[in-house]
Image (tube, rainbow, N blue to C red; front, top):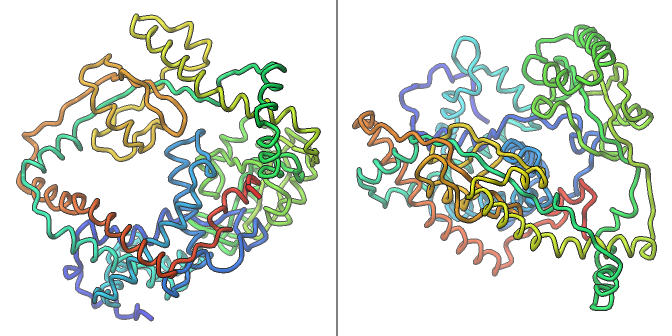
Length: 529
């Protein structure tokens, strides 16, 4: 237990001010999300039981999984926006893998004598910006409120920081063996400070129209298609046998004693929240078409701020009872009155209702066969369309074809060449960054389209502003050299992680709960069993 009463006696100058140290706290805190209306184990979607994974006897809990899953989901939603698909991107698999890797590195580091003291952890928390109050000093009440919102205890949160700090020390030990030159720092500066603005066309195979005739279906079935159809049906039964689902948006007005309340909501009384909810409900009913904008303005649900309150499709047992009872009794397009739940007061707008259905294999056979044939042909058709479009664009044409394909130029806006994540929905794919780096002059277009998760991107440079080397002073050079040491050691650290993981797997010391690995598929009903 950390002794917060003596925090005023801490020497602020004694804490390591490096960006590596604060990374530890940021990793532990994630995006400071709360679980919201779909909070697992709280009347919403019930996650699988037991530990998410274990490493050498150390269990990774369901809560550990949920915290990182919430953080990673939010990051990917911001990167990929309407292209975000947690199942296709394997979010839950990534979460389990990341938790396993960080735990096995912690275990291995401690076996090699690397530790973190309570004092180091305490200083990180006290000196961090996250828990400073109005006076600019550590605020225990703010800290305890955060712990409550994340279902953390003081012990579990500090233990998470301890593990991150130990792993970070392990990584720093490797990075200390590197000695990048100042020229390397100069190159990094040019990458980080040079600005580019890129236009792009995104062509998705799923939007390419494909017409399949009966002759093609018959040929497919004769050439082994019957077994493929049956296999698809068995692996996607939820597609043909579905519970009733509702697609809705909501506005949450929380208050200080509501479950998972955070931010301004913690200053609001229940009566004040109810009065505000009634006001918002009246406005929502009067301006039903502006519901998303109202959600962005009023909702206390963090994810709703960026998604206009959109909850996507959900089953009745995936939300708290008070919420579901109302949502599943509503008609598409309607807006509810004020609905109270443990999270606060909700205003709900139902957009779509999918009624329950049950379709046999025989009934679904033609539909599945057509889908499989189209799926096989779409990448080939897309490649042909992209090639033809590129040729037309190089000749200064292509407008008609773009209209036919339903695409238009989108713009990233200015960003640094060294950015890991490219704005405008391009994400962090290495091939995209390499393609952009190859563009020299405004108007230059990549000779080949870039494939990212099956979608094809045609990239064109709109503008490029080189970095001003005269602003690279000695202090900045030193900072870049230090950060380069850390980044240069990264491949070695990854290789070491792979070796350690393989050893632990061979020794039977790693367990991954398959239900957590498939968490997103379970949530969306896209499981393969």
